[in-house]
Image (cartoon, rainbow, N blue to C red; front, side, top):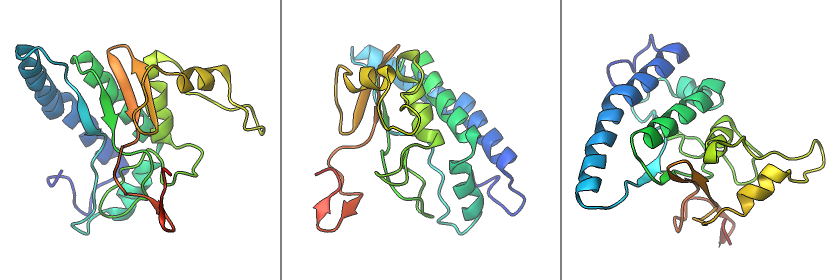
Length: 188
């Protein structure tokens, strides 16, 4: 990313770079690691998957933060997970369910455990078994049939684990004290 992370970077340029990186460099890494997994007879699992933008170099923090809520970020997550599945990946473990944005990273599918949704969260949920993202009835908070189906997914990993065509998509992380409320861990 260093080659584009300068004063002339735009959101268009950032998303173009992210998708190109996914289609070239990352795609090669996935295929290479799938070959190793196949040689050992194990499935290929993604741990802490997702975009990894940071601004620790002091460059383009506001632009990278704006990218988190841009609809193209949702498209990027669908593209990333779609490539993972197409290249033979099994579990896609997204990192993380909820973390606030900072220059150190924009990791969370949500910025807070109290946030109702986001473009990243909706995109990850939309990749579950090819189904549309779960929704709630307007203004009532009552879950729809899609949300109920997602809640009864075959496996639970921290917050959400659900089936995809090639395996499972996970939203969340387990055992990391990354979000706290008072003296209690947020997941308690």
